[in-house]
Every structure is written in structure tokens, then in C-alpha cells.
Amino acid sequence: MKHIFCISLLLLSVSCVFAQKIYVDRIETDGRRQVMATTKEYSVDDKDFKFCLKVFDGSDRRDWLLLVSSYAPMSMESVLLLKLWNEAILRLNVNNIKVDTETKPAYAATIGSMTTIYPSKDVNYYYSVYELTPEEIEYMGKYGIKKIRIANGEKVWDKDFRFDSLGAYLSRSYKKILKQLETPIKKKNIFDGF
Image (cartoon, rainbow, N blue to C red; front, top):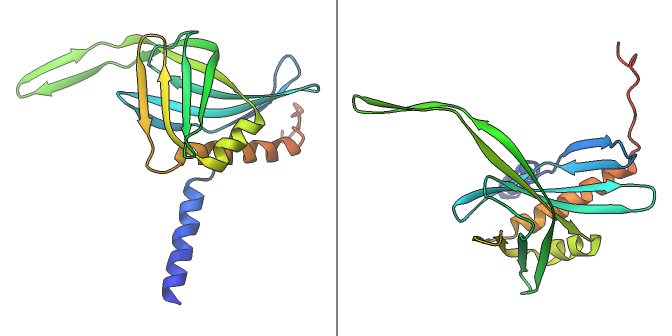
């Protein structure tokens, strides 16, 4: 009985750790509703990439997008390959690229009696957007993602997964976003809570 209680407690804590949350839920200027889940970060070869599922919901259609962001340069030739555990391969071509500039703060490194100061600098941060269908998201959720390959036209980054964390993340995000879309967004009045 004690073992069952400990295992149940462990499973409950693990499920809470991996719970997806909604990061953005707003109405865009074109009237479409944007709902976006929190990001999931992975180190892919020598770069860190953040993955995020979002949807733009309008009166006539619903656009599902996978947002991949990193300091790694991306271009309109970028491709994302997803190998599933059933050996199927999904190829996602980039739909859009956005480049922001971020300022990395200055810092100092001391080795022995020598201190080197590195000044702050502006660096590019890339957002690449890939279109998905609900069927592709459900397929990834069903079979899981075994490997990803991100290519920007010049360089290729690979990551093998020991277990399906990215596919599970996308599946949970999809379900969470669908549930969020069932709830109408409430526009806040200027006098609410004043």
C-alpha cells in the first residue's frame, strides 16, 4: 500500500511539472484570436532552440503554427524535419522568419589576477514559423517524435530523443489550446476592478 501511494504521488508530481500553460490569449488587430502555449527549450547540437505551438483563430479558418526560436540564423530556406517513432518523417518548410535584435549584457571574467571585460553587444534572435495541420499535430502526438533536424540552408542541427518529450509537449499544448478556445475571451473594460 505504501508503494502504491509513493508511485501515485510521484506520477502526480511529474504530471504537474509537465503541465502546459497558455502564455498568450488575445484578439489581434485583424480580429483573429491568437492563443499560444508556453515554450519548450531543447539544446540541438550546439544551439538552444525554443519550440512553441500557437493558433490564430478566425471566423473562417484556424491556422496552427509551430514557432521555433533561437540565436541560430534562420532563412526562408529553413526546413524542420521530424522523425516519428513509427519511422515516418514530416517535413515542415518555413512559412515566415522574424529577426529581433537583443542586447546581451556586459560581463567580466577573472582568471587569477587578470580581469577581462566583455562589453554588451546587440545580437540577432530568429523566429521561424512552420504551418501545421490538426492531423499532423495529432499524428505527432500519437506516434511521438524520435528525432528532429533543423536546417537553415547552410547548417544542419540534429537532436535524437530518448523518449517522446517534444511530441508529448505538442500534443498537450494542442489540447490545452483547444480547451482555451472553448472559453470566450473577455474584453476588459477600463472600469473592471478599478
